[in-house]
Image 1 (spheres, rainbow, N blue to C red):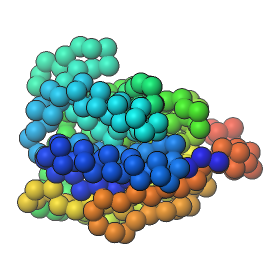
Image 2: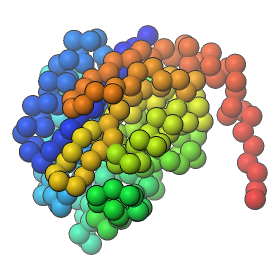
Image 3: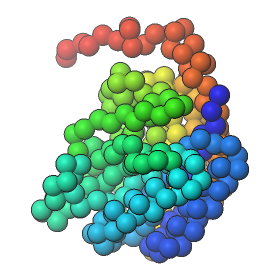
Image 4: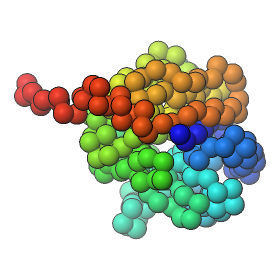
Length: 274
């Protein structure tokens, strides 16, 4: 059995202040005996309009996170960071950036996932409308990272609404799905827990939903409720507290194998043309 940590944060626009919280949570996770800690979306800097400024520091921030992973001997799923270049190193020339989730071992960055689904929606909150595609370039690449305790299918926030991605990650060997998120208060209240459980049921993977919570500036409010499911879709733990929180939950690969053997969804799946 392995212990895994899921984080809730109330990140603001001060990178150094956020890093103080990040290191404190890593220390707490390590004290709990966890092998992995998952941070939420925008965990290093949460500030509208600062994507380019933060993206310019992508490699510096990546190295800093690699140092923390090495120092504390823990795996890190580094929520999301804005990045000005694609995985092949090519620069995004139209002024947009990529939303990147890194999987970092104690030795190096092992995998990079660029967010596929972008949040272009109307929401009944103080912001009103969101158009991520104006600021971010989408990816088309599905990523599974191999670890000693199981394979991690990397997802981000809005990706949770697309079951085909979770199923594809499972088909490519995922045991765990990570979902760094910054759900709006309105959509999170309606759907966050439901989506964590649904994607676990679809894929028979354990789902780790790291979350932003609270106010970020004057208009943006996020739902929080960082949580984790088991491979049956049951909630293992979910916080209803405000601010920085850490949940540490067990993951048992043998138990997951038993769940999948008793209900072999992948073998039963049939593709039906409409």
